[in-house]
Length: 433
Image 1 (tube, helix red, strand yellow):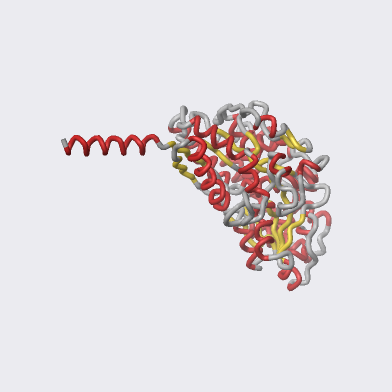
Image 2: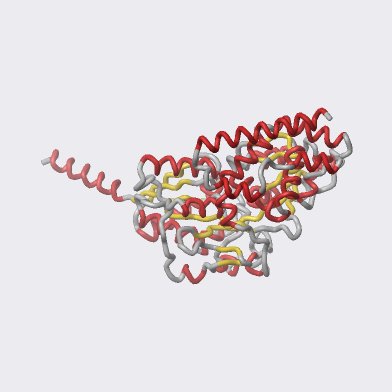
């Protein structure tokens, strides 16, 4: 009888454990997002659905690495990647995943569907296929260390062009866009804002001034905070919390005038999600006013983050209405008439080939580029030499045409090698002249 009782207890205990729900999230988000959202979601889930939730957070590095993991899993099993949620990485990434049919369709329930608008200032908050929804918004600008700038005798930057000045040689730190979706988006902003030729000239000069390319988009932020570098291109939510912590006398962040872009940071349910209902509940939670307040309230405030200010923009206007006078910044994107809009379809189509092009002519050949840039500067930055330095190996139209063949690894590797050879020969010539 005792043995039977013990068996029943063990079976009951096991059933309770198995009854707990589970959610698997793949995300390139920094740890502070995980530390704030996940504990709050667990509490919400327990209170709302009367059961515990186990959340597995897969951190595979930056956006490109997370996408690579997702694709690899689907290659092994086309039906499911055993992942419920893909969260973060910029709109172009989600357009790409949607085109590959790796995301599931989901319609928000009322009243949430009414609260979250279709767009703000022309920037879309969800795809027409309803495979992804913006969970936050990001802006892109320049993060700088005021003391380092003063020590080096520089003026505080306010435009992308300022970072291209020879005065900033060796004073910049940037992330590799092949691993950082943030870096890729910022390069795209420059090209679309300035046009192909002028954009490449600016990006080439900035790369020439760059001390080194880092693997993660958070590493340049650390370099600026420590004073190892003076400035960097940066996303707002990396820069603003550091300014809140260390003060505006030490650090600064500026959005280049007339080139301010809002990029939605999407969330999506992955095709074949093992726990579809739980995934839907998580999307609803992330877009709710209560969760959205974590993005805009200061650390320690009621309803705000516990450990660190997140410094992002919310996508649910109700969160702004309920936090007037309490937020870390008075900026409200829903009260702005318009923003510069990226051609997201074009960006998504060329994302992989674009980052490979940057990798070949600016990153893998970075030492050669810096030597060539030094030579061009020493000789007075003659317009012809600057143009030769900055000229890419392909036109924009050629790049768009080649993007359709970029899944062919033989073609891709052969093309990248030709780009590297092109860059090395050009840089060697300009370094010697």
